Image 1 (tube, rainbow, N blue to C red):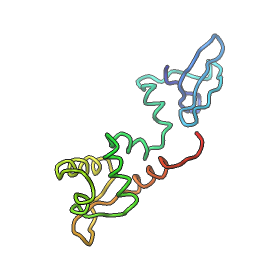
Image 2: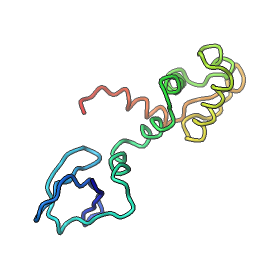
Image 3: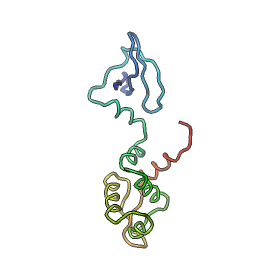
Image 4: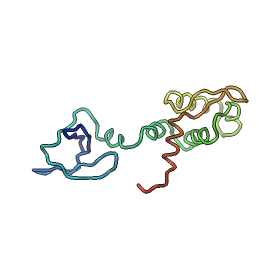
Length: 144
């Protein structure tokens, strides 16, 4: 596969090419259609895998990239569902050692998925709007 673009700059994945037309896939919808070859051109320097990933909403890509396993994803979901929680409360509630928890929180802060927050129990963390949007999108049970 290759990344191609039309005259309007819209990017597609090239699925199949014939003499007059090419089958292309829209990364946002997954829909395929034929375009005349003279209406598209290759995009140099852009991986087709990056183009394919661009169809996934940014908040979801950020969470998927940062959450390495179910436990780390679960931490983001819990912060999204429960609101800000103190660090001590997170340590008490979940099966993470202190260094693992702080490591995950540091990664999530760097990714813009959590932010420091003052809680009644002291210093804590809250999910960002990006995380809340991603969790809502991931929970969507609509048909693809």
